[in-house]
Image (cartoon, rainbow, N blue to C red; front, side):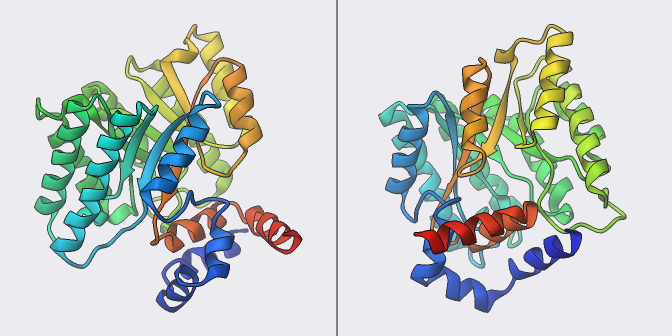
Length: 308
């Protein structure tokens, strides 16, 4: 499995394959299990359908590592449109974005300014912006930017961040973020990280995820726990019950197209569930990282592709 994971991570950076997949009908068809569509209208349609099941949504306009300031501003404009449309349609939805999509690799100040303006817009519309975490080379920069945006009264509690359980540093980061009142989405992590910074064994990552989840549950802040693993969900539910933590105090998050049965079951049990709904033409890197996270998805996709 580690070899297969590394292979998919490597493929996610293959520009030729990316160009072919993102511009072919076969590629778009394969990706449709995990991607809402190519347009804002597709994302809103899916959000409405998911909301009808009693499930909240976070919308992600796919893209990363822009190469010009103009690209960064175009990416941001999609999010400004989303925030207005979510408010107009009264959807139970917020947004997630990557700082490299907002120009982080061109200028950290550019990315911070764009993200701050989006958080300000979100707060004005009663919404929320989650800053996604990328690979470990930008972890500290991302956290520094989120802390500064959170400190701005016009943005403040309308911004949160993602922490990855496979990084050794994550417990200290969570303790610091929770102390400040910053909302966290905890996930396992989907990048190929060196053993110097991340747990190399899945069992260690899983154990750390549960340990960090308990830390977040103990916090007075509303946090999100992103996993499809029923054993870990069971451990989280048990900890919450033992410590008198109400289901309304936190939410489980899952990916669009993954474990829909489990999503519905958790809602029926009274837990808050939010589905991460990505959309856009630049879907290839995201899609390959989903296959890297769970290689069984390859078999699932192949079976359904040839059946249809």
